[in-house]
Every structure is written in structure tokens, then in C-alpha cells.
Length: 491
Image (tube, rainbow, N blue to C red):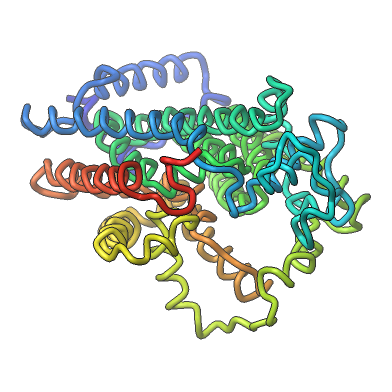
């Protein structure tokens, strides 16, 4: 009985205060380990179904998860080979970035490094015949993604070097991205288990319903830094949650390390810094005595040390911390040739359309699918079900919203939206729904926490099953009927 109470307390943020594992005596540390063994037993076996479900709904949940996993992995692998290259969402520029590191051992420089001749030939469809820089004009001649942090591109180099054929290198890097997709699925499961305990399979299936959407899977297939940013963001949330639950400075140092890696994978993940700072301040306040703050200072120093070399490189190369302003100036003639000024009055409508309209279906197919009204409406329904409906459920948490645990899971998405507003109205730059793909999986774990108040218990399973069935129907159309640009039947 006590283990069930502790599990409930951990879920809802009401557990009794306990000593951190850094400052505890051997006796209190032993007691802490014993409490967590009880909590682990309360969570049950790894694949135990959530309590309160009948055998039928347990079977449905198991079947839904199996379908989701098969859908994500199989389409990821097949799509890596069948989807035409390069995606107009900058896949060729990401490929050029990797090639520069693999073959020259240096980072590309914005405005100076040209697109590789092989990438140009592949984009023109003439490879293995040679291409010249005159075969592409304007932005296509440049390595215009060179302002991005380098971690993903460095990590992709071994995959790039597995073959000498430059067409096969595309498939090799895409398979690397699919491996990161599988890693994301596993890490999401770990986050759900850490947060939800014996209800983790329900939370996992709710997040997988989002991961299985065509837009999410396709974004992972096409070469881009998003493939590494998603698993790292989920890992950061997991480590930060554990650090706060255990009041462990060692875990905070680990979370700080992952935070540094997050920023080195995607600059937009600087939004995680305030959340890390919030937990550090809350932990420092809890400890009271400044003598116990030294481990917390180490936790601050670690991400700074990880990020500093790249910021120093930018300062030396571009005389600024990031080359974002240069990239905006370079790409504005293409992205916003008429220099249209976006005002704050557009915010409500643009926020809704950004979150809903393109969430489910890939941008590459949007124009061709505009003549499929049923498919478009089904996509909008799924988008509403995933984000707005989830936010309504979270609002039902009431006072529990104002806790460090809720901040770890919910603030990333909130800050992500604010960041998009700044990009759009502060920098006058383009935004896309893919910019929230790093934080939505974390948010959906919080939505799963909020479903604990729902009666009957099978309702979240029913909704997730319906969403998954709709996703299967959309994929069925895209695989067997769609023949437009970037069709899966191509390649």
C-alpha cells in the first residue's frame, strides 16, 4: 500500500521532502534506495499494463503500440530509400554540410563555402556525370546551412563515409537519421516510464501517435539536424526530471551535459536553458546552505564548457556569437523577396495555422494534397486532437500546474512557441511547424499525466487507438494512392 501512495505522490508532485543523494548520510541514503525499490515494484514489470483497464482494453493498448512501432520503423526504413532526393526543406544543404566536414575536416563558412559539385549533380539528376557551379544559381550554390551548430553533422560523418558513391551516401545518412528516430522512440518510452510509473505504456502510446504522423516520420527521413535534436531534447527532460526527483547534483551535471549537446545540435534548443536554470534555482533554494552549492556550480559550468568552443568559433569567424543574422540576410531574397513586414496582429491566426494545418502532412506534399479534402480535414482533426485538446487537458491539472515537475515537461513547449513568435515578428523570419517537433513529445507526456483524472480509464486508450487508425489510413493513401511530388512510390 505504501508503494502505491509513493507512486501517486511522485506522479502528482506531493511526496514528502527527502535528502539529496549527495548530502545524505549512509542511513538516509539506504532509506532512499529502499523507497525507490518500493516505487520500482509499484511500477511493476517493464511491460505491465496500466491499472484500471479491463483485459480487452489492455489488449487494444498492446495492439496499438505494436502497430505504431511497426509503422514508424518500417516506413522510416522504406522511406529512406524510396523518397526522392533532395527534399526542398534544405536536405541538399544539410548534405553539403556533412560532406564538408567528412572530406575537408572543417566546418563550412556561411557565405564562403560553396555547395559541393556532387550535391549539385545529385540535385540536378545528372550524377554521376560531373556538374559545375553554373548548374545552380543563387542560394543553391552556397552551403547556406553553415550557420547551424555542428554536432549532428559531425555525428553523421561515419555514415557518410560508409560508401564512396555519393548517391548511396544519401541513403546511408538517411538510415542514420532513421536510427535516431528509433532512438527517439526508445528515449520517449524511458521518459514516460520515469514520469508515469505503471501507466507508462499509455503515455508512450500517446506520444507514439504523434511520432507516427507522416510529417514527423518524413522529417526524420530527410537529412537534417532535427533528427538528433529530438532524442537529445527528450533525454534532457528525462535527466532533469530524475535530477529533481532525487535532488541529485550528479544528475543535474548530467542534465547540464545533455543541455550543452542540445544547443550544439539545434540552436533553437537554447529555449531549454531557462528550464535548467529554474531547476537549479529551486534546488539551490531547497538546500538553503551555500556550502552545498558547489555541485550546482559544477552543473552550470558543464554546459557552458560544452557550448563555449562553438560560440568562440563564431566570434572568431563571424564576429558574433551565432551567424543567424548573416543567414537571414543571405536567405531573405529567397524567403521574403518582397520584404513583407509581419506584425503582431497576425499572431493569433498564424499561431493556430502553424500548429494545426501543417502538423500532420509533410510540407513537400501540401500543394498536391490540397485537392484531397477528406485527407486534409482528417489531418486537421488529428492536429487539434494532439496539441489544442492536449493543452485543455493539461489546464485541468489546476494547482499542480505550478510545480517544478510540470515546468520540466510543459515549459519547453511554451518557450518554443514564444521563440517562434520572436523569430517571426522580431527577426522577420520564416517559421514552420517542424520547429516544435523537439518539444511536442515532452509536452505529450504531461498530457498523459493529465489523463489520470479521466473516467472511464479506457478513454485515453480509445482516443489513441482512433488517432492511430486515422494515421494508418493517411499512410495507406500516401503509400498506395499518392503519385505526386515526393511520393513513396518513387525513388
